[in-house]
Length: 211
Image 1 (cartoon, one colour):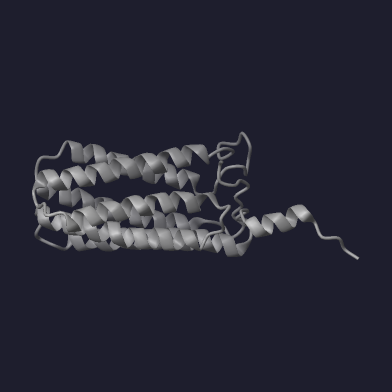
Image 2 (cartoon, rainbow, N blue to C red):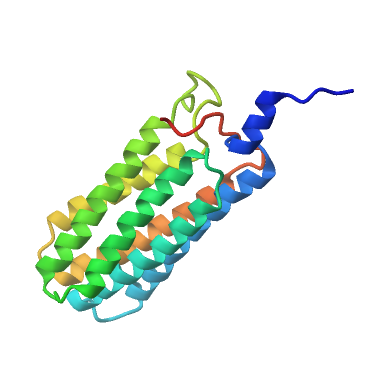
């Protein structure tokens, strides 16, 4: 009679290794769900002639709230031990706050748009960059397989979001601000889709969220 392995039972309950196809698929779905609002808003800005501060705030509000729903919804479908769950929950809360402020507060000036967009990009970019750095162990070969499978992607997106914050700090007209927001949405969204589809079926995350 085969004895049950307690360690294996615990792992299945906590659920963190992403080596099984179900969890690899959940990672992929969470990343694609996150990408869709960014692509949608980015394309909407691209094909809209009006690049005023009012449109920028509307676009940021839609992006923030849609991203919050996608991020938090996708995160809740991931196992509790999956490190990406915490990142997406944090990013979702931040995006939701930025989107709500952009839509609710009665501000239409360029300074208001730059303040909210710059603050969101700085916080979100820093959060994702730090997460990527913390979870990239083994990706360079020191401990092969010990890092998170999307750590490198998080580093790229985090750096790109901080880059957006830097650009916004140097901008003095709404056309450029709204245009860069649209370009950011399209580029990051497409990158996330490619990264998600590039995840191998046997993707294995051999770590839990750091305590």
